[in-house]
Image (cartoon, rainbow, N blue to C red; front, side, top):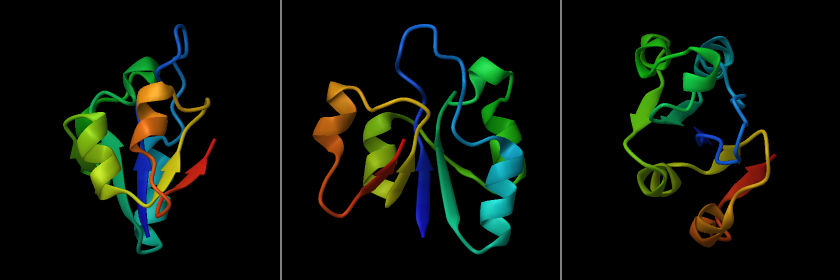
Length: 93
């Protein structure tokens, strides 16, 4: 499965749904994991931290939504993200 982790968009929301450790677990279970660039910045995790465990980094939310199947977020998606969701996507928030 192609699992995607968008950057959180709510004001003052610094959490991220997937840490590098959880990404590694998913990749070890043969999933493809995508993270939006800077998704882990609020928890002091860089794109390099995610890349080092095998994640692919999307340049923006549009690219992320074109690559993922299952989207994992802490908070509900914002309006722009909802407009990118299709019937082929699954959202876990």
